Amino acid sequence: MTGNGDKRATLVVGGTGKTGRRVAERLRARDLPVLVGSRSGAPPFDWDDPGTWAPALRGADSVYVTYYPDLAFPGAAAAIRDFSRLAVQSGARRLVLLSGRGEPEAQAAERELRESGAEWTILRAAFFFQNFSEHFLLGPVLDGEIAMPAGDVAEPFVDAEDVADVAVAALTDDRHIGEVYELTGPRLLTFADAAAEIGEAAGRDIAYVPVSPEEYAAALAEHMPADEARLLTDLFASVLDGRNAHLSDGVRRALGRPPRDFADFAPDTAATGVWEA
Ligand SMILES: NC(=O)c1ccc[n+]([C@@H]2O[C@H](COP(=O)([O-])OP(=O)(O)OC[C@H]3O[C@@H](n4cnc5c(N)ncnc54)[C@H](OP(=O)(O)O)[C@@H]3O)[C@@H](O)[C@H]2O)c1
Image 1 (spheres, helix red, strand yellow):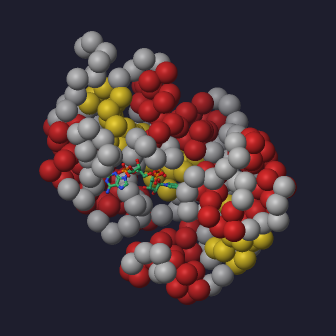
Image 2 (cartoon, rainbow, N blue to C red; image 1 turned 120 degrees about the vertical axis):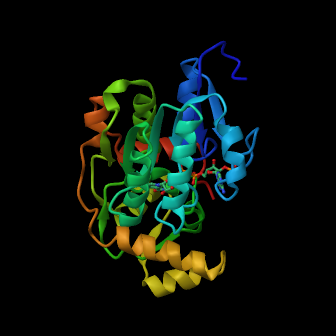
């Protein structure tokens, strides 16, 4: 039941996450029916339990697909292949996939989705602003020290709000079928630049400390299994090796407007109090 008469729903996989939550909010604001696909959804959806996929897809005409933990991780391409084929068999016409820039493994997953027979759109996003405010870099920001295996490489950080705007456009407007959008912000920033802009907005000292991949993996392994720590480290070390240090025009191409700047995000986010110690 979608509660919206005979309108078919959009299944938002990861619908409580950084981009999925924003996509679901936008669809609901347009009075479009939404099904949330996550382990806490009703019915629950779990990437690790394919038996949950068909019940979650029931009634879905389109799907926003975010893979967890990361589309570049082993097993992701096979899961996307099986899920996207099942989605089409279940009656979903349109699939919009969140992917990452400069990740060959993620591109293997993209190919699987493109071959599903669905109308597709691929969103290849840069590193999200919200990693600093809602995700794994919030703790380091609060501790005043952001350590990353990124040297002085620049990244065109992108706002998850822009990613969600493009996702909703792709889910609701035929003009985006068959497009691959590389989504970046309007400006290249090093992690030191980002730390300084957050520090200025939050009124605190926040240092960026470049670390080696080995140091980073060892620190992560204190909080997660060592093999997962290694996979995440390898992912960061590769996407932050300079290959992505350029701007792309995906937000403007999809939406006809420029992407939001980190210089707007940092003060707006500081005002929410999330960076108060
Ligand atoms: N962060 C970045 O900078 C960045 C950049 C480019 C691309 N990406 C891509 O973004 C994707 C993640 O999307 P996101 O950042 O919007 O989400 P997210 O914030 O990481 O949120 C995770 C979502 O997935 C759900 N989830 C967690 N484990 C799950 C499981 N085993 N099965 C099903 N759902 C699960 C969570 O809900 P429950 O806990 O209720 O299950 C939540 O809704 C990744 O594939 C990554 O490749 C991220």
